[in-house]
Length: 87
Image (cartoon, rainbow, N blue to C red; front, side, top):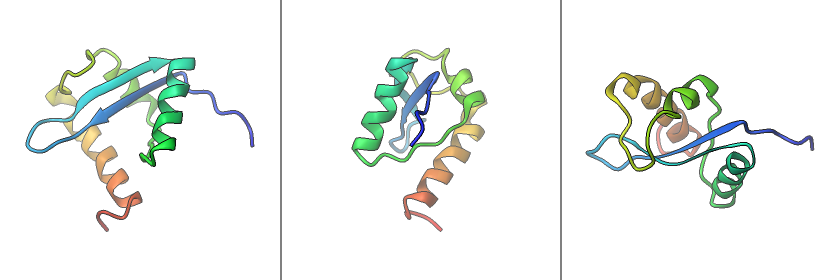
C-alpha cells in the first residue's frame, strides 16, 4: 500500500439543530494523525481539498459560515450514504 500524504485535514461535527462545527484541523503530520484517528474509530472520510482549504480559516469549535453550508451538506450527504444511514 502506498503512503498517502494529507497536507490538510479538517474534522467536522454535526449535531442538530446547530450548524456543523470544526473540531480539529491540521497540516502534515497533524493531518495524518487526524485521518488515522478517524479511521481507527470508523469515521468516514471524504477528500475535498478546496473545502478543507476554505474551512482552514475557521477557529476550532466554531460553526461553519453560512456560505459553506451547501459544500458541507454535500459532504455530509456523501458520508451518510457511505455509512448506510441514507440511500
